[in-house]
Length: 278
Image (cartoon, rainbow, N blue to C red):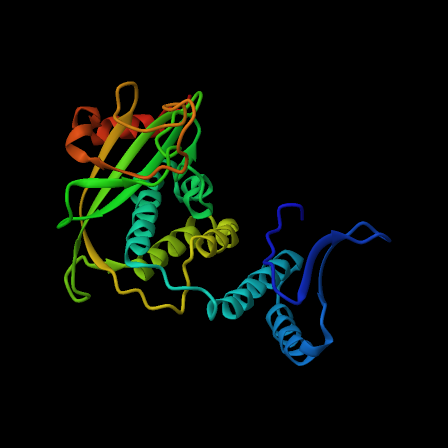
């Protein structure tokens, strides 16, 4: 029960605990404001209908938690801002990295567990012995990428660091091979459901943290053009903490791709880095 992930819902207190009398695990929901009793009653009725036919306690708990996350998404969705075009493209790039680059080698479960970009961490993915920062750019844009923090390309002790740059071309929905954010999320959900159903709730929580919403319309539709990999090492052009003894922080800057060409690595070398933990 300690690993159970429950949503935070305004006006409700959801807890996973142990009963004092017999030590058995317990899930509880408590209404904090009686003014919302009518909505709370509908919520409880829905939960009961969802879990009443569960085959066993484990599936009942999974159904309960999954349903509370759906209510959380419903109530929160109206207040959540739609991701900007650049944020949509960035999230598409992270999900593609999870599925196509890490997932094909380590499995979708390991890739999902390694995903840190959803919670604003300096590196998008943290694996054993390897960190990956990924960037997404438009094919028609200038040949540069935006580094949004001095920490993004900073060294991590004991870890190698790879920068992935995905290039996407704008497309129409009916073009062969074209996809949008909803399509990428659907693909990831399907793979998690097949390979690691125990991580379904983790996926939904991370998507929520990343700003994704099922009900929103996302206008960005793309075709994947290429992925370039760069090994960040000594001599790599970057701004990192310590460049200035006392000075600016929270630094953003543009990095021309031509300046990092000498550090490009091939697909095979990237696979070796993914396959070989430190």
